Image (cartoon, rainbow over all chains, first blue to last red; front, top):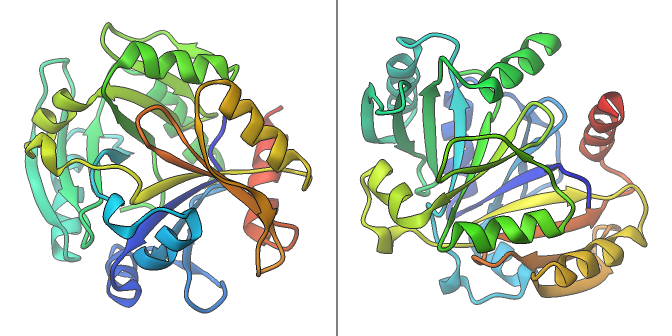
Amino acid sequence: MEQRVSLITLAVSDIGKSAAFYDALGWQRVDTEDGIVAYDLIGMTLGLYPRDKLAEDIGLPVEELGNGAMTLGYNTREKPEVAVVLAAAKAAGATVLKEAGDVFWGGHHGYFADPDGHVWEVAHNPFSKLSEAGEFRWNGHE
Amino acid sequence: MEQRVSLITLAVSDIGKSAAFYDALGWQRVDTEDGIVAYDLIGMTLGLYPRDKLAEDIGLPVEELGNGAMTLGYNTREKPEVAVVLAAAKAAGATVLKEAGDVFWGGHHGYFADPDGHVWEVAHNPFSKLSEAGEFRWNGHE
């Protein structure tokens, strides 16, 4: 199994409401079939899919699906950008779980939850090679 | 907020056990600090982090963290590869939730859960532009 992820699927309770949130962040939808909303993340995809249909698709009871044990990360280029992104997410309808603040390891971060409780970490990591790799990739596609 | 994800963090109950699973898939760890295990996904990172520490970090009670409402996707180049990847995951310690089979929309897929219940969809989608984009990106880095 190659070391990669092609798709992140968020189980959502109301696909229109959830898509409105990502749209409000300024994200552009990809054209997809009815009942699925997808955002192209430069060679990877973030998909929104109804919670009951996802549970049925996987073959798990819907009550076994939950939120928050997996988080999505968003790294910023500059430290002050963390607060700006949290504010933008809040304005789009997110709940800020942790305001921007310094972290013991030398970084700066905060958390927000999207309308379905999916947790995003917004972070500035001045030291990480991983962060640089992510920025390099992004810059390479601008 | 730019349209991207930098990091996927999986909350895990036993980081050594979870890392052993991803190691058994043949994945290579990035050198990181103690207590965190990270896999570089070509410009993105998959991180493993203890469930209680993640909950503390986010500021949520640990019982509000769950599994499965977010899935990770892995697209294959060929249809028979879906069953091969599911078997490889099973051999590495995963639970197969749905064996490889045709899907109504013309694709072929299956699901497995990692040792902490994080759900992966393994799929072959012969039609999707998204799939092609993912393959293009991967090929571009080989």
